[in-house]
Length: 304
Image (spheres, rainbow, N blue to C red):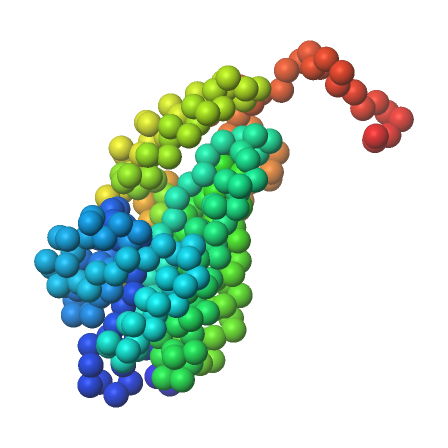
């Protein structure tokens, strides 16, 4: 197989260190990836909305840049400055993101919009900016940090799951489109990670008094129990770096026992059986035997 087909991340001319642009480096997986990349000899551009949180990364040798991935002008500026300063961007790790939690019926549309601008449009915008240079060089690597939430759905996560499904679809399409140019495109799918992701849990309290209040309480308890048992950001970062440096990268890399067990299980089980499994974790979802007031019961005469 040719070098082009193997999607090398090493600069073809070998006269400079490979350059990696990483988003969402203020904590968790992004911070761990930045430290690993700079330790392995990459010129590492670590970005975050708040650069005050990146002083230790700068001390470790990273180049620190402020970047709000939802800001188109900021994306263009960071990419242009990086190319001007270091010659190219060989690796893009789209890690920045968060989880908008709440019932589908009640999460305001402006929060849906923010979720998709952060988790989908920001990463796609950065990919569109770095791809022309990668195509011209015949090499490059794009690693999008998704989640097992991009393949299976739980209640109270409609916006979050929707954004991850969209990111995964875009990533798979791009992988098919650019392989012939020597560019590798990968997804990393962590399960639970012991990180600051749990800071999103308080959002569930906004819906505590509504029709889904009991479900929100159950979800809050599930997250509080599972996240501390999740894999460390460092372990997740090791998988990201495997995707970055692999000579023949896989399409997907799972992280954590839960991702390795639940994702194949979800593909195997019929939807009705999967729903029963979810209901055992969230008892409030079990269908009431008494129709709600005003509810129309479908009979043998057909659907309405």
